[in-house]
Image (cartoon, rainbow, N blue to C red; front, side, top):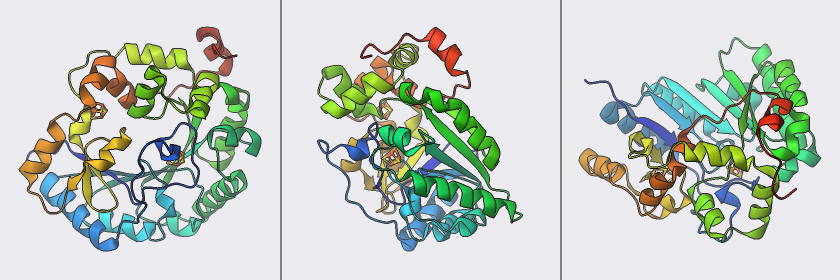
Length: 318
Ligand code: SF4
Ligand code: SF4
């Protein structure tokens, strides 16, 4: 069998209690997918097809939703590992109640935790409805569970860099060191393709526009976007994004994709591949403007706040 280029993104649940300012999940002006949990039966059929028909060896759990809200997330991960998908990654806000010991002992290989503050006051500017006390408690519980087990689970602290939290950069790095987590500072962005479109047109809801103007390093975003203008292809064609109901979605950076998903379990492979290869109605302008390339670029940046401030101009809104 030739080496597969497909990876998978799994949405165990497509809702999230945190409602971050920069996330399409918090937008009431665009249609949200119906909140539902992926059943174990759907997970089993999806995992088997991903592995045996598409040769998938890596699956990321998350996308637009909080995967740890799923009460059977540990069983779900086990299903994907059992079929032979060797590398399982999950991104979380840690805003749900968790069983830290079970998660640490689960089939998961890498857990990335996203935070944007180390105090409730700063955290809630971006993670609007997040419960900092719970997040902090969950992080300590995970660190403790990992110390007490032979688990090989790796944990990363994805520190969303915004203008409003740069003063907590060192404290976040120290927290990661204290917990034994990999520190991964990266530039927070606009939130997805619809956010880029609406920001450009001036149709983004006011609170989100204000957040972007005050908090996002827009100069960094503009430069990174410019570096990708006019690209001819998008890696989403090789990313099999599976919604909680078993549908295949076209793009993980576009909320609108939830409206046009097709049945992953029922349709033949050639139909699924054609669906992924063909552009959606947003792709033309997305590629032309560089948004696709930007969304897929790394954004990780370990430079100190002083170094970043010396390079990037102050916010135009400040
Ligand atoms: S925690 Fe993640 S999924 Fe939830 S609102 Fe924030 S960015 Fe969106
Ligand atoms: S080009 Fe843009 S809208 Fe199209 S699949 Fe890629 S990221 Fe999504």
